[in-house]
Structures are given as structure tokens and as C-alpha cells.
Amino acid sequence: MGISHTMVFLVVDDSKISRKWLIEMIPKKILEHSTLIEGNNGQEAIDLYKEHRPDIVFLDITMPVIDGFEALLEIKKINPEALVVMVSADRQKSTQEKVLSLGASAIIAKPINEEEFRSTLLKLVF
Ligand SMILES: [Mg+2]
Image (cartoon, rainbow, N blue to C red; front, side, top):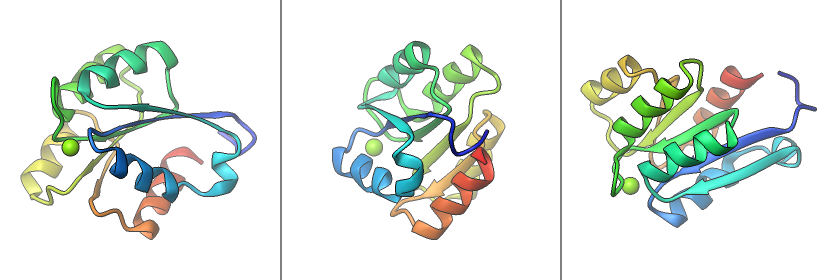
């Protein structure tokens, strides 16, 4: 997938400011060629995934309606190849292992470290 491809990002977090901070981490060169979709909870994550088939999903874990674990599971049912990156303040090893076993491609800690974020993104997408 080259940089000229129009990327579709789905960013789901119940905190608007967390979504904003994450979006600011995406390199401008990539954002210029991208479509950004935002959601507020796990149910929206699933619905927006079905509707837009984003190239990459950033998913908070603790969210109302449906949490990130369940949304991850449902998205992977829709598309086993889906690229889903979990974003969470929960740094427990058990959480990390759980999301990876459910099919997440990576987990990034909150507050997001820019270098970690960019290296994860580049590794997964380019
Ligand atoms: Mg949350």
C-alpha cells in the first residue's frame, strides 16, 4: 500500500479530545491523502467499519455501549484481515495479550507517544 493510496482511518474513542490527540499524531503527508472517520463507542466502531471499510482502525478499550474488546471481535468477524490498533491507558500485560489474541495488530499506550505511534503506523500500513 503506497502513500498515494487514499487511506481511510477510523478513530473510535468516547473522548473527543483523545481522538483529536491521536489524529494529530498522524503525519500530515499521510493525512493529506486520507479520509478520517470518527466514532464515539464500540457500536459505532462496528457500524462505521461495515459502512466504510477503513484501511486502519484505532480503537479505545473503555467505551460505553460496546467496549473495545467486543468491537474488535466483531470487526475481525466482518473482516479477519482488518487492521485494528487498540489505544488504551491500560498497560497490563494481560490486556495486551488479550487484545492480540482477539486479533488486534498492535496496542498503543495512552497518553500516546508520537514516536511509538508513528513507527507502529508505518510498520502496519506501508
Ligand atoms: Mg474511553
